[in-house]
Length: 274
Ligand SMILES: NC(=O)C1=CN([C@@H]2O[C@H](COP(=O)(O)OP(=O)(O)OC[C@H]3O[C@@H](n4cnc5c(N)ncnc54)[C@H](O)[C@@H]3O)[C@@H](O)[C@H]2O)C=CC1
Ligand SMILES: CC/C=C\CC(=O)/C=C/C=C\C=C\C=C\[C@@H](O)[C@@H](O)C/C=C\CCC(=O)O
Image (tube, rainbow, N blue to C red; front, side):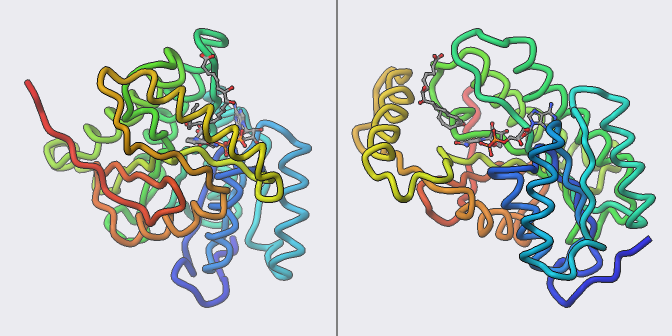
């Protein structure tokens, strides 16, 4: 067991992040390490995971004792729960779970994988979080589910969008006051909805502009009354770090946050029609 870590707001915390070998998950691991946490980095790809670990060990010279790579397919229930057990074996506990692994699918391609990975594994990861996080009322304890802004937009991507909307509804309801009290689930469960996030495009402005245009067209084409002021600005994964920190510090259970267009994270408000 080794939860000793440098000073920082997550010193003494232990995070488990899924699909963390690259992209948004990797950025979250980086942020947790930066602020002193121990982290288990889960990824289905050994190659991606090992590359990520090497990079982080160079960046945080003494981080090897605070970092664990676990090759894990989160759609495999046994492997996923084993990853929680291995994390507790190494670091003594878990208090932050980030269900990040997900796949963007076009139309109805890979529809079963979209349900298994984008939705069922997030539900399972939340259930495991509620089971294994012991210090539930600690302000540093949380389950964070990564959804998408398209989970809040009008519909155009049948599988991707419906699974992301499902994550939002699941998170809102499991985290609502009624369920928190009725089931004594005192761990905060929240979701963050990133806008389009792509790494490596900062030096390729033409490609970035054309992707922004393509995504904007795609998203607004699903709207009955397209918002003429809707703007899509591609961010890179590093923009997600501040959003993650903000939600960890300020979020309440059941919250759905948006992190898009390189702007500070903002809370979504829902209006019930029925
Ligand atoms: N990139 C974007 O524009 C946006 C992404 N999101 C969501 O954010 C999350 C992360 O997205 P990105 O960083 O773009 O992902 P990415 O595709 O760059 O990385 C995903 C990582 O997850 C791993 N992975 C895939 N299947 C897995 C499985 N079954 N078990 C464990 N690991 C697995 C991959 O090996 C990869 O390292 C996803 O849930 C995605 O839907 C939401 C909004 C925008
Ligand atoms: C389009 C989704 C917009 C935003 C945010 C998000 O949640 C996840 C994004 C992850 C990857 C996005 C890839 C975008 C690819 C685009 O170049 C287009 O190829 C998407 C085009 C069509 C998708 C619709 C379809 O064929 O069903």
